Figure 1 (cartoon, helix red, strand yellow):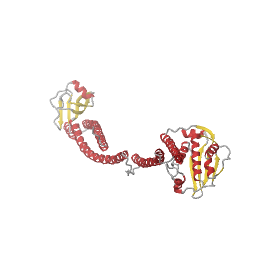
Figure 2: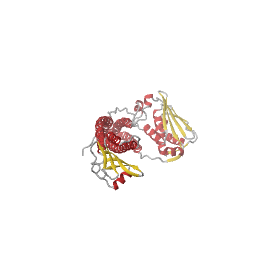
Figure 3: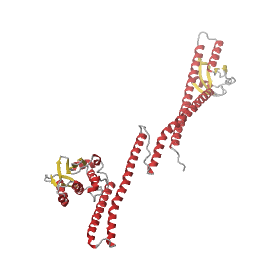
Length: 473
């Protein structure tokens, strides 16, 4: 089935509406004009009859004067004036178009009808040769009618009037249609052009080409749609870049440990690595396997979050105790660098959240702090409790971050130059997961740092059920 363009649909719809409107206007005009003509014609005939009546009953009435008046009246209405005797025969008639049958003899019934009927139409029992609008009147003497007058005009005059009116309307309608077609074509093009541009852009986007931008500055719904498509294209382009970068980073992160594992295993199997060295290299292999495990676990968490399958199990717990537990798990690394710890003697701070996810947040931040604290440095904790939220600050001395690095550290797989040198086992997902888990809880994380001095992460979390109800409602 051939697809019709939106221009054709707009144009044909507009043209059809114009035609329908013209037909309705034309029919209405002809009906109203026909009724108006009939009313006016009867009014004209009635006025003419009243003039004849005044002349007949005037002081200067004579038969000659009467005939002259009747002729003038007939001429003025372009019709006929007929005088009928009380016996039904035609006494006098004057007709512009020879419409009167002077030999007609009317019976008593028709005489009574024209005496009582003020206006009507028809041939009046053969008195007229064709249909006429007529007004009749009886003249009385001593209470009895002695004659009858009939003033008439041809019904065909209405047809001629309507025909002239129709041709005037038709000429006007043709001009109106031509103008409407041109205007409809112009408007249809103006309306269809941005929609065609939108369709073309959408086709490009569907093929993965997000470079095309819509230059539509309209302030209506189409303009809003174009702006939304531009924003969508920018978002999809960014997502495509992130996806490509994500795949490249994952491939790189997987390739390095797998190459190491494969090389050492092959060396052990083919005897290149002697028995006395195998334990050392197996420990390296174990470290790389654990690195792969962390990467896979992090990827699974990211997949759950992005698919919306990550669910929160809220319980009340002491976040200070969570900090202490995480520090104990890293005791060996802390002692190896002789790092001082302060602030963990704080009172209990109870929050209602997913304990496992918050533990992961705290663990990642402390692990990050331990890695980048200088030898004999300091990691300090600060806990502030408000009615609706709490803040936990984790500050460590050391190299710190630059302003450029602060804006990027929460991106997936991002590593600073310093971290690449000091963190051989990390994959650059820890802080991304921290921010994502906090967002799931309605929390935030901020960073303050002075290069060469310190780095501080400040997390904010809601404390109670009121926030959860408000967030989920």
